[in-house]
Length: 167
Image (cartoon, rainbow, N blue to C red; front, side, top):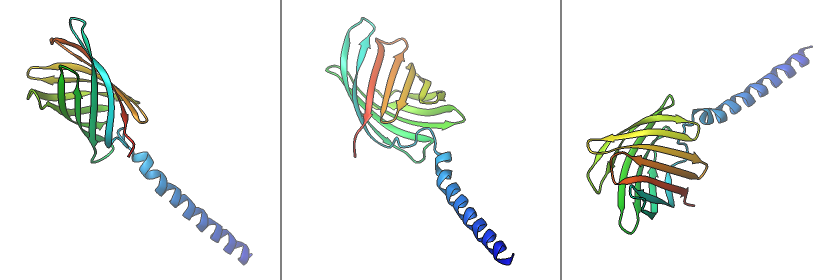
């Protein structure tokens, strides 16, 4: 009987250790935020469509840094033959909401970003003193797509598809 008790206690300890190890491994996964793994260089292309219907191809690069998986900082550079944009943004997530700031360093225009994040899709509005736009961003693995629809400008829409560059 004493040997049976020792075996049971030994097996229970092994089970406790296994459960502790499993919890330790799964804790970081449970704590991962929606922007997990976004840090890095992203490249791609897209198009800018003007209000008069004219369109130009864009080439883009985004440099993304992170302090945690619930936030990111991004420098987005896009250029066409006649259009250049350099936008710095800082975005935070909490409880399904996204908030942040942005600045177009070429024009000096800046403002705030606010919206919702559901699954791999963010719907947000950006507001500045001289600019407003709706932004939809979808993210799947190493790919992201942006659609930006400014209000009251000569730009009708900007579409960009990015892929995370290999390290």
